[in-house]
Length: 243
Length: 190
Image 1 (cartoon, chains in turn orange, blue):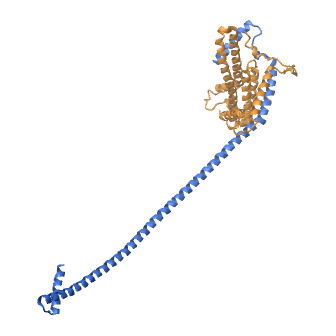
Image 2 (cartoon, chains in turn orange, brown):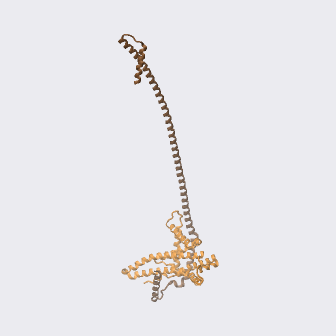
């Protein structure tokens, strides 16, 4: 049986690029990032090529994406989050396309690597924290002191709040990474069963594989959505300071 | 379900690791971490710039344009509706005025007609009265004339009869008196 983790192997494509001792070679991971990016740009380019009163299919898709994310932001983070709309839009679309491209056979899933999701999560975490301090100044620390808590409990609650705040990037990155990795590993394992059980016993894992593929497409969309909506919620905390 | 599947995979991996030495999670191999982060930042930044500067304004302007058009069309439709309602009201007013006029004309003409009929009736009545009177007079005249004639004829006849029977003439004035007496009695009976 083939190693189900082999699909996550990163290997370099082309020459080795090294800048001040750090290996920055172009890899298969980079290649699929580029493929996702090209697909996004192609879709948006075709979707915005014509300005029709009654939209065509691609124009409709791009407008639906726009309205979907616009509604998501205004629902979770309010009007103040309007300047961050392009970032959330790019984030959602990029993660969605990386997940979906990963569903193609023989492709590489960029988001199944912890370093990729952690880079996003850390960027969002640091960005949101900096934003909170810029907008509210020192008062942003109030986020760790929920209102209406008895004074005796306050130190414990504050510690819990600080821990939960600091674990945001971890939960955000691990959620996406683990979901993608687990799904693709399961697909590979069941695929391997189909081969090893042959014509007689292979039908059951094959049907499982088909069902899992459907589930994974759903998960690919859902995880991109969850990632974007959690970013919106963190942004909302920084912008509106509800506690 | 998800947690179960993750633990399942980890157990599987653990089992694998004991069999195959080199198996494991390639994700935890730091060899290409810097490269992945670098390319991610580079590619994501370029996508972000493209989307921010080109695609979102384009999509937004198109959506705004459509909304503008829809709003304008709706406004126009509203205006047309108001105009139509105004026209309908005008029409109804006109009809009402016409109806009132017609009613007035009808009632007026009825009154006039009644008056006309009354005057005509009166005239005719007058004429009839006149004619009746004339006729009455004439009848009276005829009557008196005929009575006179009957009187003179009777006198002549009486004098003739008397002459034939008695062979002599009687005093005319006495005959006249007798005839007129008889006639008077007869008239009374009539």
